[in-house]
Each structure stands twice: as structure tokens, then as C-alpha cells.
Amino acid sequence: MLWIAALLLLMGLAFGPTLWVRHVMGKHAADRIDYPGTGGEFARHLLDHHGLDHVSVEVTPEGDHYDAGAKAVRLSQKLHDGKSVTAVAVAAHEVGHALQDRDGFAPLKWSQRLVTTANLTDRVGSVLIVGLSAIGGAALSPRFFLFGILAIVLIGLIRVAAYLVMLPVELDASFRRAYPIMVQGGYLPQEDLPAVHSVLKAAAYTYVAASLFQVLNLLRILRVFR
Image (cartoon, rainbow, N blue to C red; front, side):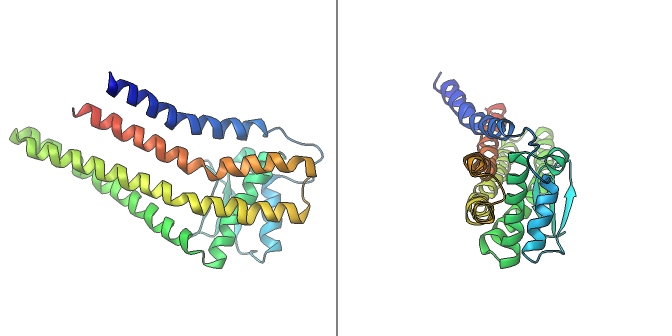
């Protein structure tokens, strides 16, 4: 019963932030006819204004992000073409990452290295787990199954760490860069700034929600090996 209660609590912690992020983004996603441009156009304007004309603005189906390797701000179709608080705030947030890259913001580089490591361990670890499980099954040795479980735990922890390290990077992009730019530039009506602040907070905490979900997924996998 304690295990079930703990699992239910963790599910609430994992899904709660995700649902909150979606709620905030959706709440402010209605197009505004008084806005002069789309999220994509706003991103382009901010990049040009800060001397980043070499950074492209692209549509992506993979989620809003800044690709430091390709020097590209990538937005979903809805936000790229939308004229909403969510569209312009998320666009500014991703431009904030481009400004971090320009300034050589050290935490951005650290987080990128850790994410790259996590992606590599995911691929290598998946092959290793399958191999150890097959060998363990053939040899009827619990030792190989134990190694497989340890590999799963290690992979999961690296992924969780990668997401958590992103938090200071995301907060910096939202509140040290994007929000001051939008306030000082007077891009939106004063009454829209609280909504902008909420959307930028949701954008920053997206990776926290992802890390909690990863913990839940890790526990789910380990439950199978009990």
C-alpha cells in the first residue's frame, strides 16, 4: 500500500506540472487582432535588433526550442504563425537562448553537453539492456539481470539530471533576457505583462515537468523487475 501511495503521489507531482504548463500556454493562446505580428515575425525582429541576423527562424514539429548547432530558433506552426501572448512570449524565450549562445553563457554549454550525453546513453543503454537481458535469460543468471537494472537506473538518472540542469538556463532565458526585453521595448500593452510573465514561467519550468515524468517512468520500469 505504501508503494501504491508513493506512486500515486509521484504521478501527481509528475503530471501536475505538465498539466499546469499546458493550462497556462492554452489560456493565453487566443490570437489578438491588436498584435501587429506573429510569433515568428517577433522572433525575427528581436534577433535582428540584437545583431543576430545569422540566426534563422524556422517551423518545427518537434517542439519549440533553440538549436545552438544550427543557429536556429524553432517554433511550432501554431506559435510561429500565431498572434497571441503565448506565441510572442515563447518566441522571446527562445530568442533568449540565442542571446545566451551569443554571450557564451556557460550554463547553456554545460546543459547542452549533458543533454548530448543523455541522448548517447539512451541509445547505447537501450542496446546494452537488451543484450544483458538476452544473455541473462540464456544463462539463467540473475547477475546479468542486475546489471540490466543498474543500467536502467543510470540512464534514467542521467536523463533526469539533464532536465534539471536546464532549469537555471530556462529561468535566465525567460526572466533575465526575454521579459526585460518585452517590458523595456514596450512591445505589448501593460495589461498583458502578467500573462507574459506566466507564459515565460511555464516555458522555463517545462523541463522540470519533464524531469519529474522521467522519474515516474524510471520507477515504472523498475516496478517490472520487482
